[in-house]
Image (cartoon, rainbow, N blue to C red; front, side, top):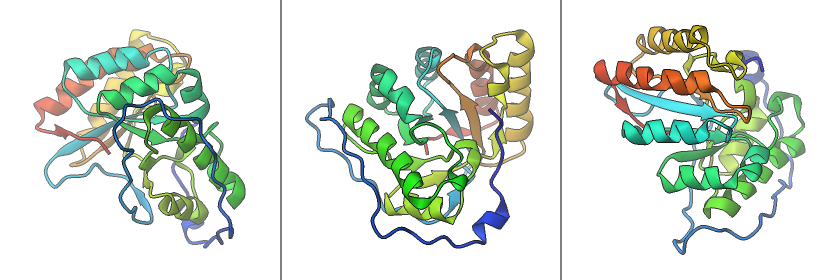
Length: 244
């Protein structure tokens, strides 16, 4: 799937919100007896850089859960690195145990829509439904709705931003694209080295990079193989790993 950044022209076009926003109904939560958290109020607009005044880096994984999610979780745990997972709702529904593992391990679990459409091409009601159905699925698994949202392809308009804000979801894009999805399930050395190079060359130029990677259903072994080296690079260069 081709990753593209949002058009600035779209942001200049105000969109009118529908009077009634759709809310999906989820099945009962399977989380523990802890009270569901309430997301803080979200500011309007996209964010591209990791939080923190010092050198920080946020590792993010889109489109999961998938075949390499468990491996990625194991690597993050081994190296004591926080991360953020932007799951697609229909994939979360198919791999509920992996979403539960992400949440139980303390990683941020975010909304990446129900089935990965280009949000900027959809009317308000359909955009709302994409967000709400994915949030309801996550809440049914973890007991809490997501507080962060990433639009597929990084594409959005004013309607997307206002719907996310209304749902108390901060919108996070990225500032470093490893283009790992192009490996298409391959773990070949070429793809591993390419992912590492893009992460280091692009991320190393920034003080607070947000790094985009994937763990789609077919699996992304090249990403898992590259991850320890990427972690070592940022740690060696004085970055602190953060969640979104």
